[in-house]
Image 1: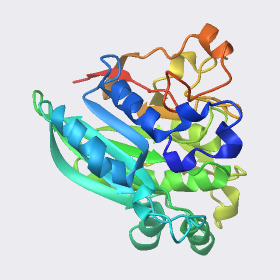
Image 2: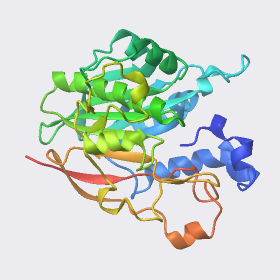
Image 3: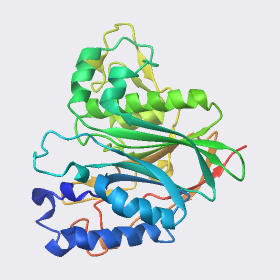
Length: 319
């Protein structure tokens, strides 16, 4: 969504007109985008949703559209000023069409606290817990996991949404590992559920997070993970969930493909991960025409309210 508190002058002032940076302009455009026939979906995941606007805008709007959902707000970041309203801090949300889905379970994950209090280490390796705890505690990332029942088929779905830290591969990888274990714990309760893991992973296709999800494992000696492992005979760290496909698999190497576009960033950072044994990808929203993107300096602008574009996919349930 591009939370208003992230509208950093050093990033956006040079190419986004003041009018298009304002919340008064972007809010109705965001609402219009969400309601667009090409975007509105049975399940919708949002990142950088402001806590105050979730309560005052998005939850009521989605309820009018026939959706229910949940939200988890991040903790107070270190740069937040004492006089600033903490309700303006962002988080992630998941909404679902109540005509098609019934809520079975909700799991809210504050990544640092989950590691401290609930982490079971499904990875079966000896980790430097103190070092990991120190790194995670300094960040405020969260995840949200909803378990839904598809009313017409009776099938259950575990849907997770997150927004990983914006830099440092090792931090993002550890955060993803913690969330994947949380998903695995939910799946233990609902063993036949199909899993969707969506969000802004702040990770390009060459990143350790991408490799870990795509290949279902990562070498213990990988530079992003090696500092945290203190077991010498460990060769691989295995993904406990198994979600080796994302919606970009067949076209991931196309140069013009992107989910985020600013003057400083251009590429794929957002994904929907799934297991092809459980779901069949029928198609996804094609993105923005390259002729248009070549003619602009980045997003947001008059027509796009965020620096990210919607990622929309259609799936078929496999028997």
